[in-house]
Image (cartoon, rainbow over all chains, first blue to last red; front, side, top):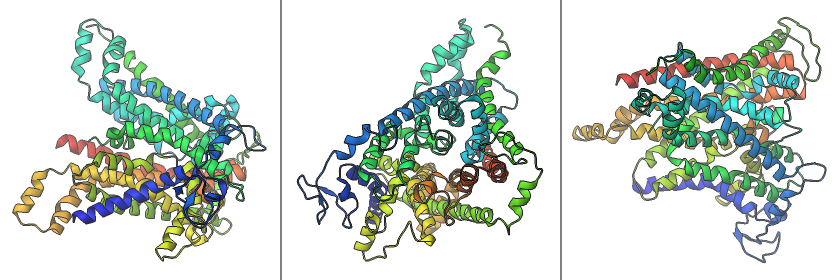
Length: 287
Length: 295
């Protein structure tokens, strides 16, 4: 039984991690080594390029060109990475700030129809981006927002509010009411009780929420592709555009870029590992 | 303690609710209006044409694409969710035991679901490549068939499913594991005293006690899989008959064909489906929460 269990876990671990490991290996290859009919997974300095066997000679070539635009386009990978960072960080800050205050309101006050409002907030997450993007685009055109950072920041903030409100409500519900009630008795105003008592206690929750908002903004593709395809283009959309030229898909460069793009996610996932269950279920399941 | 103004609570919740109404509810309603027009993406003028768009959709003979996309999406949701459920649950059963390095193994197992579907989907093109892909090299090495995943029409949907299962099995595992861990040990001890067989314990205790959380996970995944767009775009493009999901069809109509009016009519039908599923989901969540409070 124990052997079987170990085997199953090992199998899932290999299958689960292999694509990521393969991505890491591919990033350090020369282009001909990425499309050989025998998989090359052993880095050996000085191995012949496109030779037989499993050895390849490692190189930083894939990384070297990331700052240069491809022929015929204006921006390089690094420019797109910067767009992703600006949009991701700004929308995360906005959704955590709005979500925390909204969650506090629902957690501490009697609000008419509170349950219905909360489920309305959650239901916004179920909308397929492609089903609402045409009216958003028309609305954005009237406001001059397509192809700007601000446009996607606003949209991602709206998109992430469901997550932020629900996660933060779970965290704030766990802070005893007695804390701020004693502060209110001591003459604090509600606002200063919120800022000086609740926020410090909700720090972990806010950090966890921020990570999940950042990751979903970072990975988002549907809205980014349809609203921002000519300016402030994010990394996933940039990559999707590279797919077209089948003949010379620059795999080492794609892998190098993708590696830089996913490493922050890997790091953040490790940081919030104890809160993953909560994060991916909108705080509806707690361990 | 001062009496608080009733406007205070409005100040806390209103900004978020207004934001959501502007950027979610308004586009949704606007979408309904557009579905009765002949609006084109690049033209400002349009006319109301009544239910013409809806007529065109349900006239299946002139328009087989919608039925096809509906079928593809249904197949995709069904296979993806059930495969992920079975694999994830099996994995969770194995992960239930205590062993050295478990937190690390768990984190590594969960990694795929955090990654970008669009970016990883693009890279999967290299993995799935018929002659140069590592998957076929492994399969070939084991003496198994090495199919052309991304060019053989009957296998394209399998390829999308494969990547989706790779990404989301960890999700099912995580929730199933939470369900398994929540079963109190004394129930198993009681079963042992009663000399219940392993199979009976699994069927009468483990499965029913996990079921509520598993259903929650299924609903979460189903609503997500229904939106599938990123992987389809990355692996086959939006206009491939064998993998054109509803989202991909909507993209094709609205952006490639510029038919916003018709696209909006499709979107309305999709939204009815989504809202139905979301309603089931939120009612279930509500029921689960009340039940837990009662317990």
